[in-house]
Image (tube, helix red, strand yellow):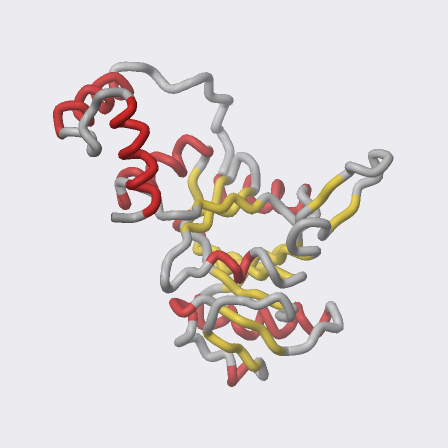
Length: 215
């Protein structure tokens, strides 16, 4: 039993309920949610890929298109050279088979550490309405790669772009049921304006976010 299950079990016990929700309880909740219309939704008469690009750029991220996932390493190398960054990075294990070495990159497949400068990830899906990346943690998709390095490069497949946040959550529930331990939303570089309302990038996470869209 996980720590999460133990905590929720104690809460349910304090309410006089069994430690784990029964199938009947889950059915009642699902019926309640399904019987109600979703919240107000703006007009969606735009192309998701076009809208996603517009919002990504508006969030101070950078963006590039490639035709196939095998082209992504060359795009990453081109971006790093343009930023005068070293051609070294860490990446998600699920991206380890890409031709990084052929592109002139030294890429380690592991979770990021505090001294790593570049982290390369995929994305579970991307939200066109806001230009947001949705990342799910797991053994092959460690969260640290998008949080610790100063530069976060995300490889996003065009067929994984959804219209809205509601669509993204519906996809997670449909494919995973219960979300994993961490669900991270990335909307551009980390930023804060805590001090005199002066916007500062990279305060609590990556200073740069670069999106490589795979058509």
